Image (cartoon, rainbow, N blue to C red):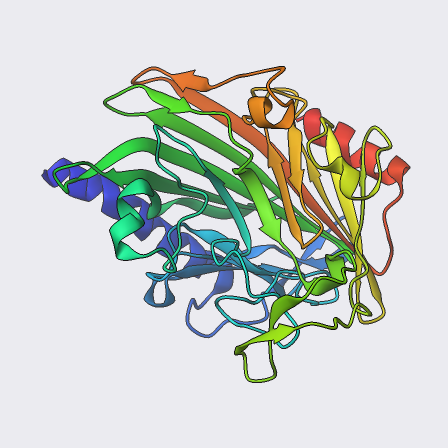
Length: 369
């Protein structure tokens, strides 16, 4: 028991020491110190652990980029909110911080996340505090366990995290079915931001089956500036942050445009295999591209894409039966003690839309490491 407690405290203590080393003061530092690289003054990626608020802040070039958050009112840790190099928030605010004109739907789609919809019969993807208590036994949740590493290396911020995927058994006892070890690598410059995610899942005391479902795996829920225009009546947030039904929509803000690595465009990218998919949008006058890159090492690569017109943008390596309409199946299986690792890159441009050449170059850089 003592060893278990020390194993949990050690990474938290180390993250505190590291963040203070990087930021000089974890409580007061907002603008990280500049560093010199090859004669050019740049500011390092700085990671600041704020345990009192259940979050870790990530700064790039002196500006907040995103935060890794794990509050009690979420059923999984996420990156939220997410910003461009011009400091524009690209993620939807609902349900944490509703903004006027947003859709009020899918309260489990917050920021950037990694979950799955059917793990030994439990739904980790759709869980939220909106689920009625009598239905909660069908859902799983992901618990933040600690920070194993937080450092800046060669202008890359590295955050290594430990999490547990948990469920309740029939007796009501909590059971961990997967342990997660995730490394996040943050980079950026004057016009781009990127996050590499390396996630290793390890089955614990029993075998684990990821049954084929479209509800996965690595996703982001975006601002209305990335949605496709629609004429259907919907529920949006009003100026006071309250749900309000709107029958005649203002589509002026909806500027979304998908395209995948195989040239498929528009909402037809849904359910297609591809090495990458990009979504162009616009917030105000700022042109923005958000792209997600699959990795050939991932199970089921090239992945299928669960990319919807309402701002959901997700890559799913494990949902073959649904996307292929039964022509394929995977039902990925881990025996107790076995592990699987997933690799993804999220890439964001600011002030312009990335063309295919740029995205192919980013993809080649990603898979070469």
